[in-house]
Length: 291
Image 1 (cartoon, rainbow, N blue to C red):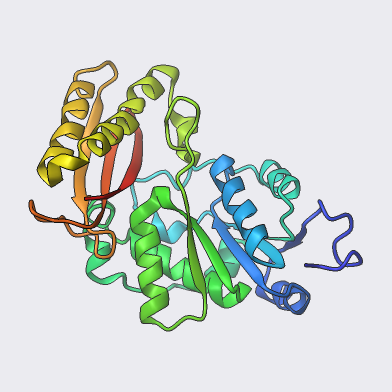
Image 2 (cartoon, rainbow, N blue to C red; image 1 turned 180 degrees about the vertical axis):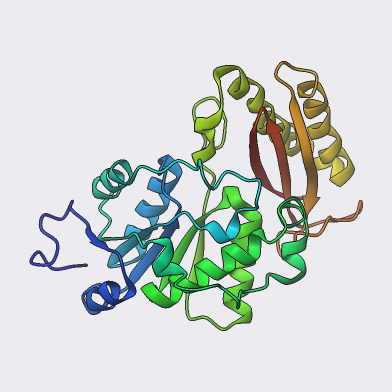
C-alpha cells in the first residue's frame, strides 16, 4: 500500500499515465493485485477490486480502451469513456493506483508482434470476432510487464477471455496468479456489462432471455449435454420471436479448459456459453456447470 505521503487520503488513488511513473511507484506497493479494465466501471468491477484488496497489499486498476481487440466494424469509437466517473469508483473502492495510459503510450508504434491465443482463440468469441483474443492477450501481457502484479483479476462473465489469459500465463511461465471473479448480475438477472448502457428499455427486457436460458440449461443438468443445450435453446427460440428479437450467435456447452464443445456423454466441469445480439448490441453470458 502506498504511504500516506504518496497517496493521502487513502481514498484518493494516485494516477499514473506512463510505465516510468508506474515504475517509480512500484517499490512502495508491496504485493500487488491488478484489475485490468476498459473503464465504464460497474458493480462487477467493484467486486474484482474488493477481491484484490482482500488478497494483496495494494490494488492497481488500469483504465484503457484497447483498440487492438476491436474489429473494424465494432464499437471502439463509441465505447463508453468517462474517466472522472471511473476514478470516483476507484476512490470509493480503495484502489491505490489508477493506471490510465494513452494509446500512444501503450502502442508507441505499429504493433507488429502480438500474442497468439492458439486454438482456444479461434472458436466462439474468436470465430465471431477474428483477432479479438490476440488483441486481449497482447494488451494484458503489456500491462503485466508494466505493472508487475502478483495477482490479476478478471470476471467470469468473460469466461473464454479468462481461460485464454490463464493459458497464456501458464504457457509463458508468468509469475502471476490469475483469479476469476464470479459473474455479477443486476436485480433483473442481466449480467453486468459496460455495453448494457447501449440497450433501450425494450431491448433490455428482451436481453433477459440470455440469463433465463442459462438458468433453464443449468436446471436441466441432470439430463446431460443434450438436455442442457436443448432447455436453453427453447428459451432463446422463443426470444427470437420477441420484439425486439434476440438474434443468437452461439449457444454451446464447452470444456472450461479448452473451450471446445463437449461430447454427448461428457461428465465433469463445463461452461454453458451464449452470445446474442439485441438491436445493435452484442451480449455474452455463461454459467459454469458440473455434469
